[in-house]
Length: 292
Image: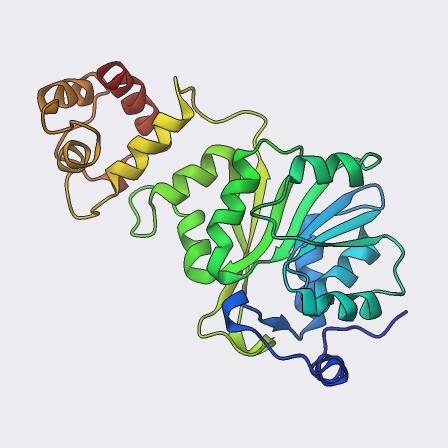
């Protein structure tokens, strides 16, 4: 068994060997607790028939645990300085491939076709860079990739928003967007003390299991998400005020919007956070007639 990368001593040794310094702009925080990595990977429920996609492998701490659990691991790393380090730290594993690429610009479909022909299930497992957490998750969900789900670490406050239920202060358009595609749950809280450098906030690991089909039928997904975003534009405002101020020509169409709310059986004086995903689906389908 190889010595874990993710210990404080080994991490510092590797960094000193390569003279590596953290780039704040890339949101680099390296995990130095093997138990937490083991836990993250166990939530992904990988077998030796499965593949894993990782984003931002750093010096390979999580990658190593994935390599031990999965048939194949492909990781996207944007920081060129880490490539020689990863080649070194992951040299014991022949089932890992590192792509020097920004996942937000990458053709992930193509990568999956090239790298994961012979796996049963595919999971995304990553300690995501905090500054681009949401765009990465949304890209991977909206592109209709053949993945089973994700187990990702991110800022606790973002995890709270993703897994939030209607009627709570964390519930918003992000909760709806992600729960439309997946069943979301927070599986562990991770204290800031297990990273170097220590971030300013605690982290959480969320598990997203892709749904076979969305929980609601909508005429247009794009318009459904436009309506949910508009409904939360200013949280303290009522849904009618948000919709009239945010939707194109909303003020001119106020009467039609009120009529659509009534057909959807939603009181115009409610706030967005009180509406469930089925409520928003009914509303978006009624409003679609008004705006198209």
